Image (cartoon, rainbow, N blue to C red; front, top):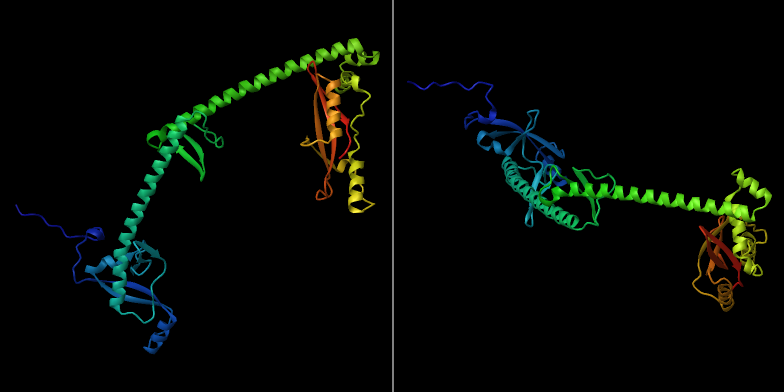
Length: 371
């Protein structure tokens, strides 16, 4: 039986179509001329333009030197250009530039070089991507091992971890772990991060509930002490306001404080005249007699003193001896003017005594000599 033969129709893809070796394809060749090349072109009778566009015939045997875009435009592979530098291949945008008008062989040699080096360039890029992927996998594996083996580590809270995805922080930024795409120990990170996240939420909720319960219990104890004080020491007016639920807590605390520190009523209290003292200080310092510091413009930063004069230490010891159950501390108050914060601060000192009376922490500050 004879073998049937069928002619190739126009519907057969070009890639598998048999092309006669003598057939040629008209393609565009685009290159640039430098200023020297433009001068040479004019001398040779050319147009001297910087951008040269030619139509060249490429044999079917050299079609590998031609690129065709999606619109069917065929170009000689003159751009992008590829050059070998050191041990690698780099890509340069734009067509080549010549100092003299190139011959057709020059253009073919350039296209052949680009064709050859493009494959090397793509191969290097592929190898580089593989190396980066391998390094990334190793790094992610290391991070995963560290996270899974250290129960104190946590994923970033924003966005919140889920069983499928989470983010871990590292020196160079955050790293995402995805249970659907990661492999090895990295795949287990989101699930463990989510478990720790939920456990922390439960622990935080329990702690908040405990703190709230403790606060409510303390408040109830304070109300009980206030009721006992009003019944034992309050005036008729205070007892009446307390019965109506209108007795301010601050009023009771002030009375308790007076009673707690009644044994040192002869010691001078710390004066609340910071605005006037800072104003006098700044006037003397700057010579501006019209300078006025309003109480609302006063800024005070309080901290424990780091040094004490003999007189200040004597006051601390005196109060400690008369209030043995109190916590006595030398305090420094740095006063500055909000309107002009660059002006020097004034440091004012006081001795703060703190006593615990039932559920209340009572405080009173006493004056000491200035430095």
